[in-house]
Image (cartoon, rainbow, N blue to C red):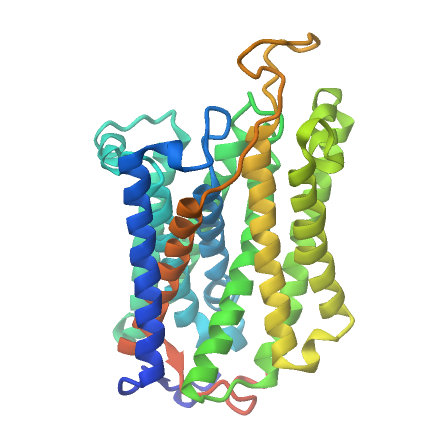
Length: 407
């Protein structure tokens, strides 16, 4: 691609619409913080969480945003690591979206701890055997390395280092998502978590979720600024989305087939797939939201060519993937805790402590507002960043993007 053709510009002036959007996002982020404060001062009695469900709706939001952050960097990685010129103009936006999503996810995660100040204990007393300790290092390192990556792309004198730093960021984000998936995969006491395949499955999920969010951000940014977005870019990203959704669905199928092969997991599969023993809500989240809305309908829209009939349909497809992602995280995180612990394999347990009974959970408005606050913070960071720094190309018209790319 001829470098002279690409010109990056920040959003000029202070349009009224921009100020309204930024103000609403900032207000929602503040509401999220106030909700966390309310839950901390009043106690978890105001939430739907209990002794069985200790990771509630905020964790669904947090893990989704963290996983999506890794996938959002895909566009930049494809550009620098795999040398695909079509994606290069969007690499800067890809980097800032990745950082913003991780910041929003970490906000929810930290505020949902109950005692956010205790995060300092984890930092000052490192436990190398704890996957949570590893992830603190991975999350902070991700923000740092992507920030350096953006510097190498935006500072002409540093352009020569863009690919080496991009490769480092690519490897780091794979490790980060592996760590996030391993949080669940290492929990051997939970029938729904105890699986090594969760690590690569989370990587595949991150590709789909991150690209879906990136597509919506790209559409919103170019629509708001009145800049041209060519069909070639939209078509390529839409087809890439089809590949990522297919990969994610493949790992989900393999995960459940593996569990069905192992007798010890049959009860869990009946719970999550058939809704038995109190698993109805989670089976609904799995089949209706994750599989149908988040996977099969978007795949049908993409491979039939229907989605590419208009930008609105592409945006709808991306939105469905995001909805399916929340369904996936809800079924995995909440459903995995709701399934009763197998304390004595092969024995039937009855007691007054709900042993052998599926957990119940109804999220409160405070939990939802905290999660919404994290999403709003991520979007506010993106909106502010593209206003003050040149992350967006002046045009992504078909005549501007490289017509001779070979992938």
